[in-house]
Length: 115
Image (cartoon, rainbow, N blue to C red; front, side, top):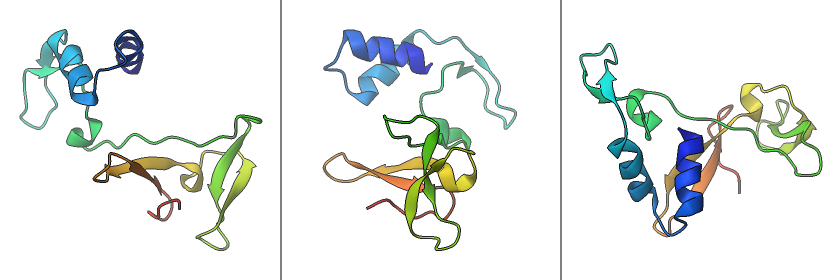
């Protein structure tokens, strides 16, 4: 799904999230049952949070992709670059956008934002 959305955005850079979501859903096959009583759902889900899944990611410096931004276990609130092991202290999620459309980056380890 991410690849299809990236292709749509690359060919239509002026589209916003909702327009991309609508294009994806226009071509979705609606035959999924989520096991919670919801049927006829699209195979393409563009808002995973609606279904209890929050996408996470690692943050890596462009100069060394073997390292990740890491919340220090000892201090709990300092971050540094450390070899990737993909523990919860190296996983991040996107927060809700503020009034200007900017997102916070939140640690899965301690639920604190980068600033």
